[in-house]
Structures are given as structure tokens and as C-alpha cells.
Image (tube, rainbow, N blue to C red; front, side):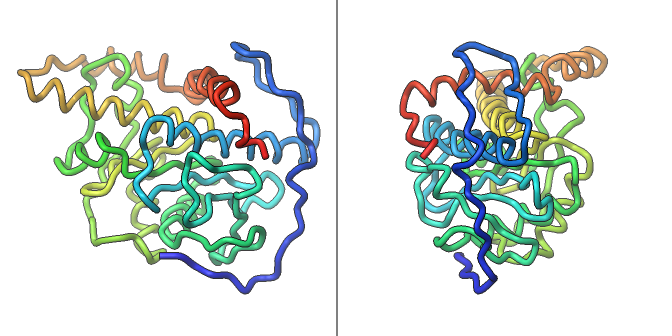
Length: 273
């Protein structure tokens, strides 16, 4: 499941461009004036995303990955290395991978499934700068039903007509042709339920992709509970669409992540290393 690389290494100094952290509670984006500042800021968010996944128990052994498109090299992406626990992830641990699946920065092996899924998604969707996937308990449980989420709560309306079902499970994703099929099924939507597998969310930012994953997993939990105790009352299509535009936008999902980032800083800011 891991992939070694013989590609020529890059020498990007990811310590450059580090800016002061935002004030706790601030919902103002940090202004980055250089590529170095932009990259460093985004890598800090990526590393924090893994800490958030660990905080909510989204780890499952070696499974799961979050990726980030490099701001200078748009066909390359940053990803977690194979074998490092989400709770231990730091900026310095992250790998930079080219479009051939070769590690061009970092010394650890690459999770082959991460490349097979995310590389094809990043190629097909230039608007997607970040994507998140793990085998979270409620996401993978809900995925076994082979259905989409219903708009039954304000939160689930964020995914109304903005997620798809990929129902072609063939085992661990190791080949890019299956990644192509996942990207094709996703189309222009924000998220996918991978049947018998788990959830996949995307965003223009890591913040939005990670918050989207957390919210979607909770929506799966909510629907599983609601269906187990009785008949659900579905929100009408027009109200669901209105609510999606209110709570499911990219800026909205970015904003929802900010308190979690603040929490990770306060809890253990070693992810900045």
C-alpha cells in the first residue's frame, strides 16, 4: 500500500513565510503576500486538519488522507506520509508528490491509495485545492446503505444536491483508473459517499474540506439515528436549496473550521513544527 520514489527531490524550505497566528476567534483570513507565505500558511492548515481528524477519532490504522495542491506547482500536491498517526502529524512530515505519484519532497513512503484517489481528483477539478478522506465510523457505516444523505436537518442541507454516491467498490483503491471513476462520479459536486468505504470531501481550502468532512460524518450519524427511531420528516427541496446556499458555501465552511484551528493551537501546537 506504500509507494517508494526515485524521482529527483525538490528543496522547498517549508519553514519560510511563517506568519503570526490569527487572534483567537477571528474570522478574518490571513493575508499572504508571497508564495512562501501562502504555502506555509496552507501547510499549517493541512497539518492541523490531521490533528482535527485525530481529535474526532477519524483515524483507522494506516487509512485516511488529506491532500493540498501546491500554490506554486499546481500539478503537485502535499499529503500525509504512510505510517504517521494523524495525532502526530507536523508540517515537516508532509510529502510533496508529483502527477506521476513520485515523492519529490520528504523521506517517508507514500500511501498508494492516497495517490490513486486524490491525484485524479486534483487533475479533474482545478478548483479543488484540498480533499479529505478517511474511514470514519458513521461515514463508512452510512456508506453501506448505498444512498445519499437526505435533507432532514439544517446541517445536512449543506450537502443537498451537492454530493454523489460512488457505488463501485472493488477493494482497496490502488490504481488510478478507479481514481478516475471516482473523479468522474464526483463531477462538480463537493462530496462523495464511497459505497462500503467512507466519505470524500473537497474544498478550495483545507479548512473547508476538513470541516465538510466532519459535518458530513455527523450528518451520517444523525440520519442513522433518525432512521432507527422512526419516520424522518424531510425538508422540502426549495428550503433545502436555500439552506445549502446559506450554510454550505465555501466561505461558510471555511469559517466553521476556524474555532477548530484555534482549539488545535491551544491543545498542542506542535503540528506547526
